[in-house]
Image 1 (cartoon, rainbow, N blue to C red):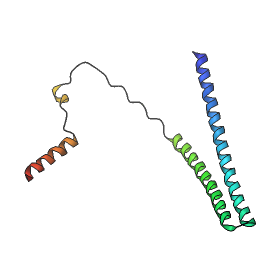
Image 2 (cartoon, rainbow, N blue to C red):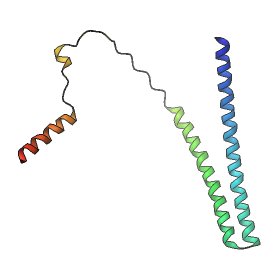
Image 3 (cartoon, rainbow, N blue to C red):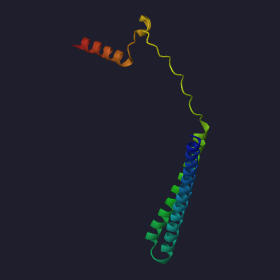
Image 4 (spheres, helix red, strand yellow):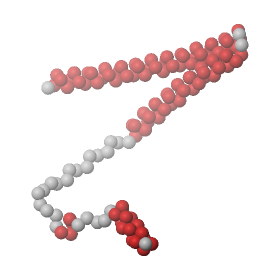
Length: 127
C-alpha cells in the first residue's frame, strides 16, 4: 500500500512539473509570436506599403497585450485561490427510524404555494 501511494505522489509531482513547463512554453511561444508579428509589421511599413504593416503591427501588439492580460489573470487566480480556506464539512445528521412528533412533521407552506394561493384568490375575486 505504501509503494502505491509513493507512486501516486510521484506521478502528481511530475504532472505539476509538466503543467508548469507547458505553461512557460505557452507564454514564451505566445510572446515570441507577438514580437515577430510586431517586427514584421514595422519591416513591412518600411519596405513596402504602410497599410499591411499597420495591420501586422497591431496584430503583434494585440497578441502581446493578450499575453500580458493572461499572465496578470493567472497571478490574480493564484492570489485568490490561496486566501480562502476550504469550507469545513458539515457534521453528519443523526439518522434514526423514529417518527417525528406531530408538531415537527407538519411542513409549512412554501413561498411558491403561498403565491399560488394568493393568485387563486385574486382570480376567484375577478370572476
